[in-house]
Structures are given as structure tokens and as C-alpha cells.
Length: 425
Figure (tube, rainbow, N blue to C red):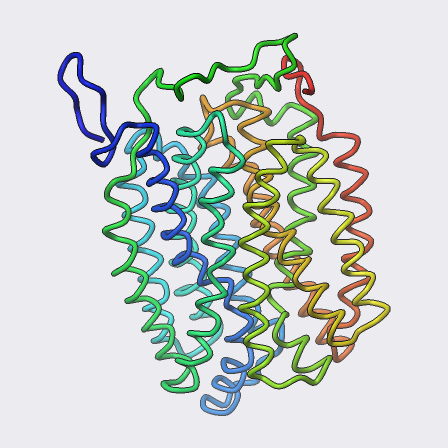
């Protein structure tokens, strides 16, 4: 952010703050597009299984190959919770730069491994730390600059993560075919660092006390949805935090399970070709990205609780359809919905955190809420792996998702209410 002389209008990237803040949203979107390469993991499942089994002679199961994916997402979530305060003390620029470098190094080091445990450490731990650092900083920037359109701004910022697989899944399929699966890790690692490093340089928080022109915080009794400014310790004592965390966890179980098995469900359960299955992963990513934007806007216009209940209705219908009618057309629609709802939760949860608890301690508050994502990242893919290993296919996944979505609906209905001091609109 540029300093201004007395009497001059402060500028951001050479523009008035009102306009410059939108550039930061675009920057965050592109950075998250690179970070979101993790969502192309289902394209790596079969090539990695073949690589470790055929070339290295190691017996690997579905659980084994899904483990690095679970690890990177879980570490991603824990890192956000532990490093949120550093975004405040060191600023989003330095933190995002560090996160982007570590993410790229995670992919690069993954290309050198010779076992699943090593892959889980190099790709999962190093890459997960990097994603958690950078993602948390970009979300905090969007939430801070847009108190007036928080759901839209956060939704656009995290849209990049969800939309990423539309590009990276097809790139991964091409690179794996052309150069091999381990070389593909190396290519992605170099690309992530080259693209994200310069983009992180302009990231900054708004000046103290700044607010958008013509916008005033809602006042109790005037119909506005008023936040209570809570620190992390105060937040975790509220019922709405419990409800938000559990609902986020359930939404992530369903969504991350779907992401992790999208391609294998197509090739193994429905017997479609590898090329079509890979292309469909990219297609589903459109809905993951679009869900972040669409449900982020809905969260602004409705409220977090109502939007959460809507996602659980959609998840229930999608999982029920796959459970009862496992055909290609249903598969395409159901998985598009599941990816959409996962994307939606990545906008609903950060928006709900700022809406219910304010932004005075936002990075640390959302870091704790985001642990639900990490828990879902472990539970969802590993549950799918256990079902595949014990039953021989993935069809048993969908009854579990259906039941969980019903539970999530009622928890959202009962607990996702504004804390005292924040009346419903």
C-alpha cells in the first residue's frame, strides 16, 4: 500500500482503496488456484498405485494412496490454526510468500520419494504447512477489506482453490501420461513457486479504521446482522461455534470424500474410460469453484445457518441418488453437487466466522474453525478407503454421506444462530 502525503487520497496498487481492494481479491484467487492443485489428487491415485506396486514392488491399498491427500489437508488445517496470529504480527505479504514457497517445495520433494510414508511427509506435511499459511493469509485479507461484501469477497478468493482442479486435473493427466507421475510432482512444484511468488507481493491489510465509502456497520434494532467482536477464547465458548464447527466437519467429510474418489468411482464403479473420468474431475471443479462464489453470495443475502441447511439438503439428495441409482448421468450430477457443496462450505465457514464473531481476532478464530476441515480431510477419504478395501468398491460410501447430511441439517437448524449481541436480520 502506498503512503500518501497529508491531504492526498491513500492508494493501493496505484488506485483508490475502493478499487484496489478488488485487485487483491483477484490476486488471492490466482494464488489459491495454485494452492488448490491438491484437489486434483484423484487423478494421481491410479498412477501412484501402479508406480509403487509395479515399479517399486510395494503392496499398496486404497487407504495407502489416499493417505498423503488426507495428511496434506489435515496439516493445512492445523497450520491455519497455529499460524493465524503471525498474519497479524508479520503481515499477509511475508506470510503468503513463505506459504507459497513451502507449497512448491512440498510438490518438488514429493518427486523424490520411494514410499507412501515418505510421500505423506514430503507432500503432505511440507505442502500442507505451505497451503495453510498462504490460504489463511489470503482469506484474512479478503475478510478485512470487505466488511460490506464479505461473502462475495471471500467466495471469490477461495474460488481459486475450488476451480483449480478444472485446470490442474487435466494438466496432471497430460503430464503423467507424457512424463510419469513423479515428474509431474516436480513440474507442479516449480510452477507453483514461479506463479505465486510475485503475486503475493502486493498483499496488505487496510489502514486502521478504514471502511468502504457509504458503508456503516449494522446497528442493533435497525435490521442489520450485528457481529459481536470476540477473541478466540470467547468464541469457542459459544453454542454457535460448536454448531458451525460440526456442520463444517460434516460438509467436509462429504465433499473431501467425493474429491478423493471422483475418478476411481467413475472408472471402477461405473466402468467409464480413464480419459473421460479425468475430464469429469475438471468438470466437477467448476462446481467446486462456483459453489464458493454462489453460496458465499447466498450467505450474505440469507444467513450462514440457512445456507448451511441448504447444502445439507443438496448433499442428502446427491448421496441418495448415487446410492440408489449408480449410473453415469446420476454420477455426473451427484458429484457436481457434492463438489459444489464442498466449495460452498469453504465460503460459508469463513464468512460465518466473521459474521458471528467479528474480525478483531479473525485469523486465529477462523484457524480454529478451519480445524473442522482438517478433521474432515482425515475422516472422509480414509472412510472411503476403508469401505473400498473391505467391500471391494466405493458404493458403500453413499449411505454414510446421506445419514451425515441429515445430522448436519438438524445441527445447523438448532445451533447455527447468532451469538448474543448479534440478532438475526
